Image (cartoon, rainbow, N blue to C red; front, side):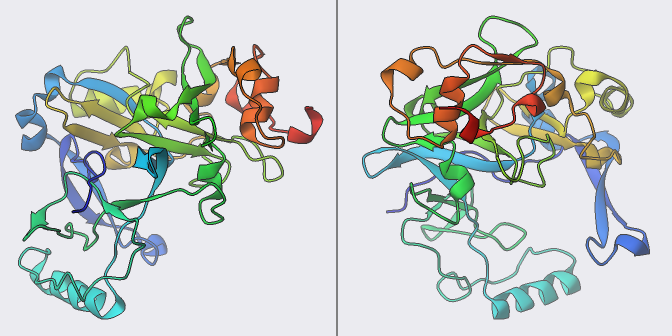
Length: 329
């Protein structure tokens, strides 16, 4: 029986959206864009959006932590996609019908092979006991990240399976407005999702590390709560995202009481991303490896070894951490 991995994969938008065509110069890459109207969606109202907790949407790639080979493991996102024939048939149907409702899938034959260790994500529809594709024709899922994986080498840099640790970026435990980089037990995030950010992820919108000395970090989802949140209306949210330092983020994700998630991306409001000076890099950051640098013998030339040698140091920005492993012994 297949196991299921973590949370909603396609988050509904705070507002009702409308689709508009892009100018001809951009149409080859993206022929349309989705923009928010001024009406809050029924889905958001149904999950009590007015009492939800707003958090920063961090720009990276989604990961998941669950058990594999008897210990907590990091899993990378891998959607099961249709083969060429099925994809062509699916696109023709959507073009003709206007949406994917009513399209008939043959789950056994229409989809590309995935590794045996692949698991489907939670919250996806099940039919006849099998995961069913979403409206994009994909079946969201996960694969475990092995220690020496070349495909997922940036994922492996933020976990130490020998000591079962994750390299985490989070708010400082004692100082408000300060970030903290520290090792945390993988088991602490069991059955949770996190965002992998860094040099080689999504064109590095936060400017971390360099090509020669890449830096990657895991950010637990929901960890950066927005304290001074704007009112839940189109005008105030637009003004906050476009006009204040705290609003220089990719978007907002609301965590609702029933576990549902609602999102709003800057692009939904026609605002640009990435930005030259996102809020995340405007905050000072402290490296806290207290205990870890004495209790663990980290492998040389790893991020864990590098940061353990920086224990207690404070930087004015994440961009000031250069990741020069060779200079630290």
